[in-house]
Amino acid sequence: MAGGRLSAEGDDRPMILVIDDQPDNAKLFELVSEMLGITVNIVSACSEAVHAIEKYEFDLIFMDWVMPEENGPACTKRIRKLEERIGGRIPIVGISGYIHASKTKCLEADMDDFLNVPFTMEELQALLAKWTTRKEKT
Image (cartoon, rainbow, N blue to C red; front, side, top):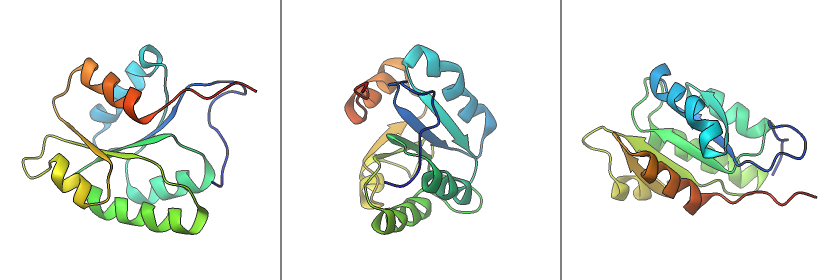
């Protein structure tokens, strides 16, 4: 996959891209990133996410379901098309409290999983464990 790492050289923490137009929601991931052992890059729109994916390597994407320009399913479609061009596949977890969002709808939109809002730290940790692995130091 094209791109580099955002974290420091030798850092084995998973790189997580958070796509959420609500600053408070995105800030939550930034605040808990150290405790969870992850590095986060937060963007507020799909176009920013595509640019970040072209530039950096991510281990997981947390995708908001409802966003003003492009919703989560439309953004997922753009990311999957980009992956066809550059190679690889990044797991995408839909995150939403929106009543019409569900794991079934996320899977139908070519996402890999779903996290309902509100969620617990245990649920978040379980998803991180399921979809990421620590990088082997070389």
